Amino acid sequence: MSYMWLGGVVLFAVFEAATMGINFIWFSVGSLAAMVAAMLGARLWLQLVVFVVVTAFALLYTKPLVKKYIQGRHQPTNADRIVGCEGVVLEDIDNIKNVGQIRVNGQIWSAKSQDGSVILRDEKVKVINITGVKALVQKIY
Image 1: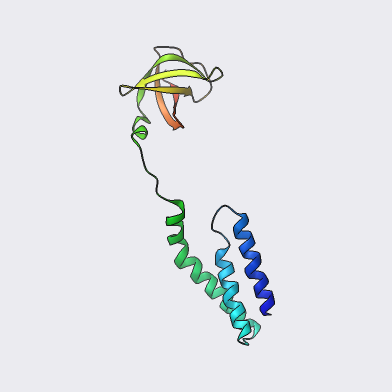
Image 2: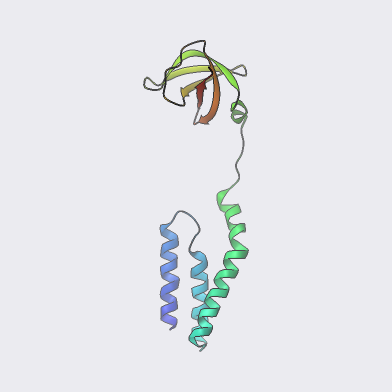
């Protein structure tokens, strides 16, 4: 039975490597603990209990900590401050031609329209989001 649990360790480790997040490592740890129990002569029901308990313990107590360090911290920038603000179009905004500039809070930003429409010079816009180095805007009617 210990070879079956070893297969579980390897299988869950492969699944973990194939996914982008931390999803299967906990099951690999549980399989490893069950393998040790099998090597010590534990019966199948006890091996299953060890697998479930160790997996649950690892999942409940270490996943929040690991997610905190893996995902990193979001560092807000000054650019986030213009989201929701109104601005004026300085250069016609045309997503197809990839042109457009706005002035918002005294700063000049490259811009594109949220819905893909052309927004003409001197029209007022609201900044919806920042994508890369461009402000995503919608026309204020």
